[in-house]
Length: 142
Image (cartoon, rainbow, N blue to C red; front, side, top):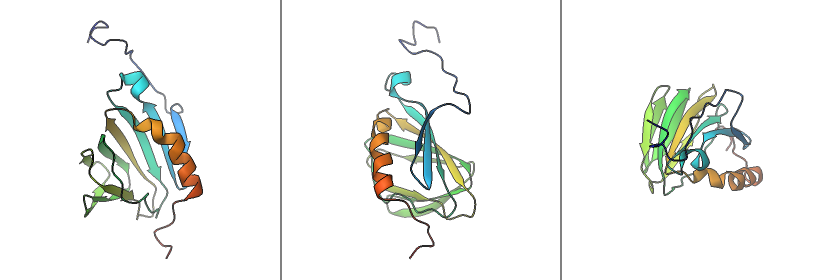
């Protein structure tokens, strides 16, 4: 792709110690590229859940989510159906579909999230605050 066909976008390399980091207690996210870098086309981030961590609860977004599981097993409920996505699995969650994710395993679970279009990243300061006031719990808690 030539610079002319890429618009104002520039190539981007994000090193392992870079990215915008968001700590939400038992869950954390690192955003590597979002609307600013992608002309609002998509955002890409990593999400990590500590072992045996409950998820945020069923929710939906207007944007599509594409997950790729990096480590562990991501326990999902998508549109009311429960499934497990092991390392190496891809998950497509179309915009508007209710979903939740948890880590029932004994090891940390991580996944890449690609959100199309970008914009989800604008919610991150609100989510950090919300999870500070409503911390995630262990799946072992009653």
